[in-house]
Length: 442
Image (tube, helix red, strand yellow):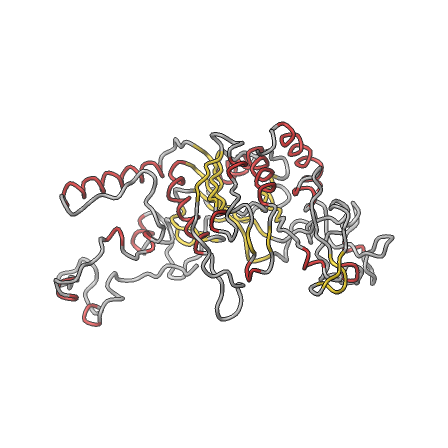
């Protein structure tokens, strides 16, 4: 997420290299590895060094590593040819796909801090895949992390096998080494996820015009007059936009669409909890169609997701395009293509989608039992911030209708979320129809 640094290539060298003439000037001091480190050290190849371009764990799908020990000259020719092929494929107009989605996921998983065990991903993946194929995605790449989980018995293969030629499943056994919460001194990290995202961009990005990495509880929904995300991207591409951002806000599961709450009390939940479960005859899309704000949303989370042009974004990290073709340019390169160069770089080819007329993201993150503590009390408060189940405002009613008193239903529960009419009336029936047309996972 750190903006690239600009300056002379030698500015981070030893002091004797820092006061050299400008690049290309007479008398420039050349860096000599033998002089700096001696001739007895084994140095890695440039291709394997720690530059940002080599952070991902594998080369693009059109390239292979070559053995430079036997015939360096021949190997260099192979490498140059492969680099050219990759560049041509990234920049060419004919791609195998127009839009692909990457997802690092598993049949079940533990949330950060091992606080909650989520087990509904097999059902979620089938619905999520059906929805995104219905809305214009050409291919989905699943990095299946199931075998790295504590049980490791189940995988997502029964679901991915339902979509031959549409879903590519990659067995991804890399473990999450530190699953601590993202707060405190020893923050957790998801290196397995980060590597999967980089792998997907490198292996498949050259074969698609657009790419996005998502969680399978995130739905990219066309809005307004649009019927597919392909159409949305086509119009934004004509505007010159290379990165499309979707704002994130967690949605609540509507209490009236969940299975009847089976309340329980124990040492972890002394005042009644229940396990929120989506009914078998309903979809996650409909059940979680209850955003905390009406669109356009403003109090969003710093966890946006993006779809980006693969020939423009050179490195992406979860929520952000960290390196792009323009951001890596030095001043001279920027001027040559008519771009005003600034040391403090700010991305100019990004757009946050208009949630009313273009597209929106519904974030259906699971609500689990320990988030329902005292839910009946919390959901009746005038400010129900602790209420994690959805009590939707009636159609046509807004928070602005509240004059001094919270808006409540007949049972005294405070309304806390809004149903997206477009999702409810258009996309939910379409999704139900395609789910019925395909057999269940074996």
